[in-house]
Length: 210
Ligand SMILES: O=C([C@H](O)CO)[C@H](O)[C@H](O)COP(=O)(O)O
Image 1 (cartoon, helix red, strand yellow):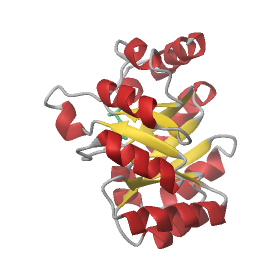
Image 2: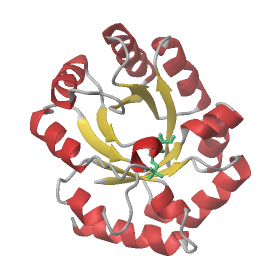
Image 3: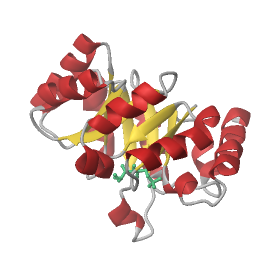
């Protein structure tokens, strides 16, 4: 199980500070959608240059022009690029093709997908590298989570790696770990803590214990 730190509510200098604090405990750093909106793909480039040993995920949440956008994120230094599971099949296939051509990985974000089981099977067939269940901020505010959806994709996905994101905290981590996803994505659960390094260290420890 890998740990991804999601950075959403920071600018580039703040992002660098946070990553410096927790670098040793994480595998992947996510340049979150709000950061890409505010700073552009420059954020991906600068973080990759500053932390070359970490994988960098560009959370573009692509919906169209998929091949082109995967190419641009790859050129900026992203190792993994995200596309939405609700995108057209042609967009997913274009993104898979371009990611492979660039030697990068594609993570499909299942946010907003109604039939998780059916779509996960399709995405698995299309060759997605990761399928990620995700409760976004707006549904987290209603008290929702993706634990059941993780169980669903784990039971049907044969080739892709599985991932989960959305409001995961130290307290809820054991419930996630018991499903054994390939990737656990934590944003506010680390970034909103006073002692980010200690929280990330504890999360890493729990993940390593399995
Ligand atoms: O993808 C995300 C969200 O849609 C805002 O861009 C977050 O990175 C993801 O939800 C993880 O962050 P937390 O929910 O704060 O753990």
